Each structure stands twice: as structure tokens, then as C-alpha cells.
Image (cartoon, rainbow, N blue to C red; front, side, top):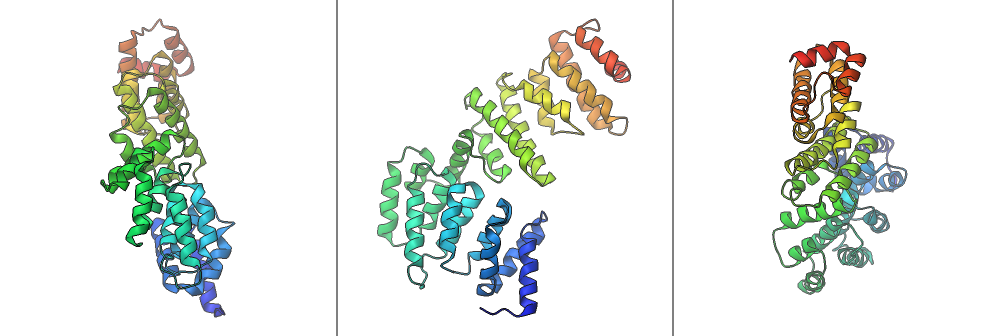
Length: 337
């Protein structure tokens, strides 16, 4: 399709905006590209392969309304990637199920059925693929639902017998996360963890904390890093409520590397399970904070004293001597609080 120069320029600018950290700008670009439809497809497809994960999700969403058969191989490639990318691919394939273009509808159907029944795929992606089939003829849905009712995964089985979708999705997010497949959206995992972390194996929560910390370090946007840190703090709080110290090292290292305030859940956990090894990081953070951040300093001091009282730390303790040597002003301030 020949595209006028002005339209081509607009499409290029919109595709560039798909990688923006500004949610409003990105969503507006997706909506505009969807309106442009077939005129934008060639450039969207060309942009997909070199794009990063977040931009690929946005491209799939923009392509969803175009109904172009070239979407099938792109979606087939995206589904195994899991997370929001796989879900976007399943949603995009749904738009092709009634396509009049040759075998596009049949190919999309085959990919969605195979994904829904694939035990190696992310649970949320399997669920999304199953949901994408809900507009198909009853015999197609029934065949897939019957297979899922025998599936070993409780979330997929629950959805197959028509239990609430939100509950099935939350269980899928949680089980995937425990197996090392984190969702793209931190809030989804935090919500799933609220009712599940208190009964999960302690070793599983420790591994999940480590996986989340790795994810924090890999994302570009500061806002999303902060969200992931909030999820990690919530898991630490869940461990503290169970009196577990299996991840105290992560609490200690987080405070040690903090350039400023961290979620209060970290400090709440330190109040309960922090040990003497956490006192130096707390004192160091207190010294770095300076007098300009009174609230953060107060929170650090409260955690410091809670640990000191519980562990019966005196001024003659080796850790207090090290603190006095490294941060004499902070040591005096903390001890006098």
C-alpha cells in the first residue's frame, strides 16, 4: 500500500511513541495506530523484530484491530515469551478468528488451541488463549474445556469448569511466579501474593524475592523498578509475619544499597526479623540521609532500636563499636533517640 509522505511521517512518530515510558503517550499512540489500521501495518511489522519487549507488546495491541494475516507468525513467536507479551499475542490472534483472508482464521485457531493445551506455556498465557476461544462455536470451546478439566494446573481447571476468571488468573500468576516466570505487571503479582504468600513454602518465597530483585535491576523505568521493589517488600513482610529469617540477607543488602527511602514494608520486616548484622546498614543509611529527610531517618532509627532491644545490643557490642568508628555522628544520634 502506498502511504502519503505526511501519513508515513505520522506513523513513524507514533511507532516511536510506542516505546515511551509515558503511559498516556504510549496508549494514545496505540489508539491512533489502530485507527490508521491497514495503512500502519507494514511499518508496525517492520518495527516488531528490533523492538524491546514493552514496545513489542504495544505493537501487538496496535495490530490487533488490523486483521492482517501476517500477524499469525508474529503472535506464534510471541506466545512462548510469556507474560504480557504472550497475552497480547493471544488477544491479537482472537481478532483473526473470523478473518475472511484465506487460512488466517484457521491458523489463528490452531495456534490458540495449541497454546491453551500446552502445559509448558505460562499459565496466564494459556488462560488468555482459552479466553480468546470463547467466541468460537460451542464444539470448539467444549473440546478445549474438556481437555483442560483434566489438566494438572488448578487455575486452568478452575476456568474450564467456569469458575471466576479473576481467581483463576490470580492463581496462574502466582504459580508462574513461583516457577520463575514473573508477570510484566508488578501489581498483578502483588495482588496474587496477598492471599497466597502466608501459606507458600518459605524456600519458594525466598527464591521469588531473588527473582524479583533481579527483575528490578533489569527494567528501564524507575517507576516500574519502584513497583517491583514494593512487591519484594510485601513478600518480606509476609516472611516476617511467619517469623522467618530466610531472606534477612536481602533486607540487609537493600538497606545497604539504598540511596533514599525504601517501602516501609522493608523496615516493618526488619522490626520483626532483623538481626545484629542489619544494624550497620541501617546506621549507614541514616548517615547518608542527612538532616533533610527527617521521616526516613526516623524510620531507620525506629528499626535500629527495635533490633537493638530484641537482640540485647549494648554500646560495648562489636557492631556498635564499628558503627561509632565509621559514622560517629550517626552513632550518637541513634543511641540518643
